[in-house]
Length: 315
Length: 317
Image (cartoon, rainbow over all chains, first blue to last red; front, side):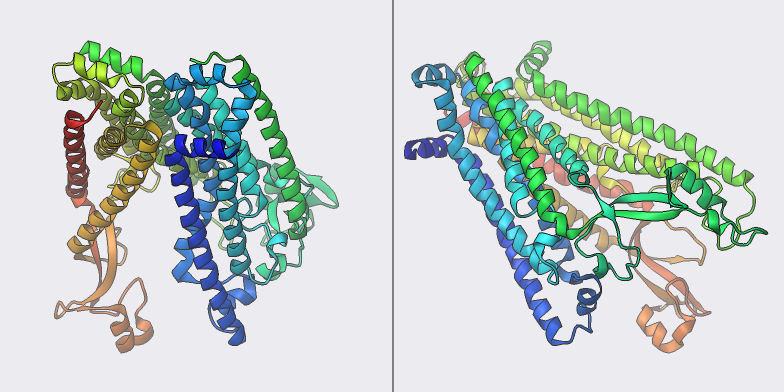
């Protein structure tokens, strides 16, 4: 196994270093922000939570630190994109480079079996990638805990996909998909383009599916402050009239027709707007379901990858 | 030259097809969205003209169908403008890197270079068709982006000023060439495609940040005080505001004036005898700053191409 790691390092040194630098920079920036927020929160609590940014802490559960908002947004976007970028950068050259350089013609017949060759090439790089993505995901989790100090990160949908288990599982899926595309196209740059587009598609698909992993529930209609619904994820609104659901179009027609100044104010015919949310406590359930689905997808793609390596011509 | 173009297409067929397809998609989308915005805006204006007078306090819009469609188109326009920026960068990176790096990595460079009269001539013949494609595709995207910005409902035939500076005009092509030149240099320097692409991406990011900071600095230094009437609409890049004492011509800032006149001063107008002044770069200077920015990117392109040529001339194949 040590030889396999050495080979992976020798063949993909540049990509591993690039991903490691990105992981290190993101983790450091996230931890630096988290420590800054911890200091602010400690100061706020000592000051009885009455002055800014403590007002924000009291009302919405987060802190308004204007000096760090731009940096925070950048780091969080970086954490969200990192697993996809790492998967593409590490996954594409695995097969594409061997095929493009013609070294697969030598390496595949020399190996005991192509499956064994694939395992020895794929696993070390995958493991290195998992370690690097996990480091960034842990830093993301620390950042979420510090940014939302009055709530557990495991009951909070803020920063979903930037921390904890989801980035690691997403990396695995994109990594296998990128290796598959690399093997299918057999040239690095075209494969990188296609894998980049696919990774974007996977990211978009996961964010669309985000609210569908579990059945959402009705939000609390008595919400007075953002802190009352802290950690919940907004899914959408539905409209109800006299206890029956009505369509959005009909609801808007009724709302537009409402004339409080008219002769006959028709307030009784106004629909009730019902907010649907995923309650924060369901965060672990959503993570488990998404991770299971993504892991199943990754497993399916791994089988396809194995079949492709078995059947593909090496040049 | 035709042979050089054929060779470029044969060697980079996949990237060319994909990226030119993307550029075409962005350009066509920009044109279609601009056309739809103009049609809908006319419809919306006609609808508002025919609508009864609004009831005070009512949020109901008489033309909600057109309003929401225009909002959707505005969002689509935002994505398309991002597409113009992204396409120019991707064209430069993915077409520039493999020009030398693929030859070195696949070990075809010893043959290719020895068959050419000189390595510099080889580079010119290999790179010029590719850079030609980058320029044409970026010009098309930039022109479509320009049309899209001018079609925005808030522009209505006026000067859009500096808005969406990055996503329109011929400067998109200059940026594309600069990115391509950086990618070519990294490819020649490292001789491996993926590492060169990663480094070229990083260098491109650094170049864009540096160019933005430099041009912003120049613009801020060039900002001049412009007196603005209470209902006057101004177009340009605004960096700050103050008030002018009409009697003496002296400029006074908001804080000073507020201490003297209290609530008579608000953000939109001063007390009698004072005029609002904006420190701004007027839209009329847009072309001048486009030239400055293009000069930065052009210079980087020239230096990078020169360095690539030198590296290739001295490099072991």
